[in-house]
Amino acid sequence: MQPAFVFTLHKTEGAARLSTFQTPHGPIQMPAFAPVGTLANVKTLEPRDLQAAGCELILANTYHLYLRPGHRLIEKFGGLHQFMGWDGPILTDSGGFQVFSLGHQMKLDEDGVAFRSHIDGSRHRFTPELVMEIEEALGPDIAMVLDECANPLDRNYLLQALQRTHRWAERCKNAHTRQDQALFGIVQGGVFPDLRQESARFLSELDFTGYAIGGLAVGETKEEMYRTLDETCPFVPVHKPRYLMGVGAPEDIVEAVYRGIDMFDCVLPTRIARNGALLTPDGRLNIRNAQYAEDSQPVQQDCTCYTCRTFSRAYLRHLYKAGEITGLRLGTIHNVHFMLELMRQIRARLAAGTFAEFRTTFLARYQMSNQVVRHQQRERYLAAQRA
RNA sequence: GCGCCAUUAGCUCAAUGGCAGAGCACUUGAUUGUGGAUCAAGAGGUUUUGGGUUCGAGACCCAAAUGGCGCC
Picture 1: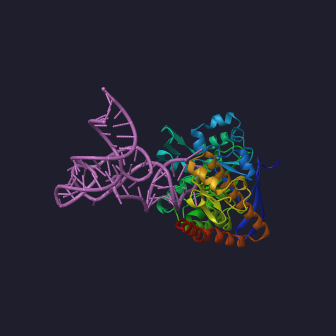
Picture 2: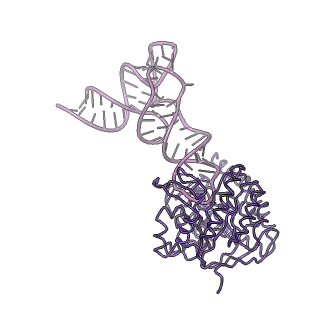
Picture 3: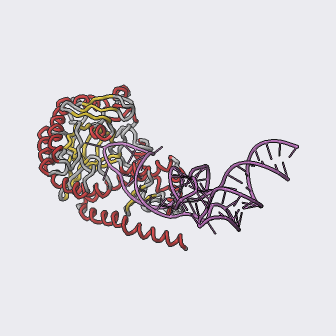
């Protein structure tokens, strides 16, 4: 019988990897980016929009869906894929992160975590076993273990939290039964190389289908995050997918691929789209800025997304200023397309063996533009205003 | 025609005769295992006009303008 999950490493360039991860709902070309659809919905988008952007993986959330509408209800509808009308691969986060960031009156002990709902204050308790039950009911292709995402700089606390997270990982592994669902472990340890390596070693022995690096992009500097990846990736299994949770910004993704990461999820592109920040190769563009009021160009000149093929910056700005929901949707369509196009370029460059060069030129253009080009644009705009 | 009330930032409104402010709107930032939220910073004033009282007036007095209400 054919195994449900096959990870194929096609090529490497330095630490960077070009690969494919086969799932029951299709292959995921890696490095991959997963837009976040916490509530079984990528905000403002529909499955056909995601398909149009070339999306091969989306993320949903155990904590949120357990609270509302409930995992048993989703199970009755045949699982997440059928419930939300998306037949591509889905990953669910375990809810660990959300309990710590959203839940009220959280109480941790060896057995699990008690918390109150951020929606209605009702009392709940997550254990590794319950979270596995919920994720199996939700039915994503990839489930995540319950972990604790602690302050990455608090070494004393991390020491204790790490042991518990490891015991929870083991319990998740033992409780997980679905063969058509992959279970990923989550390496923790903050910014400390010895803790990360200990975590990677411990989890490697449990033989998960894939490995996530958690607890980053939560308060440490970018330099600390990159250094932590340098010191962690060599210690996770080579022939398994590597997933950097919660990252990220375009520059972070390029840097993380360079250090050996295969997959990402992040709310950033969709969230900032709803606030008018649109991604371009020349850096972020805030479509609400006054300088775009009469700008007839598309958001991004060479972009093939529906938004850029169809509408001017002036029209988008108008929609945002007027609070029209279509603006949020068109902005989200563009940002998701931008991220997935970035991943396609990364894969093409890895295939061609020119990723290192791409990293340099992409970052130079993306970051320089933030400081220089946009400053010049702004100066020109202000000069025009004075005239 | 007479009487009463009102007039302060783009809008809605504060401000014992003693430094002219807030909310919204506007201009910029921020946003990393979702937050259409929120946060941070900034700009914005001949207090309707003209006189007067006072050491000092957005406030008190006189007149005008504009708006609202009431009564012949």
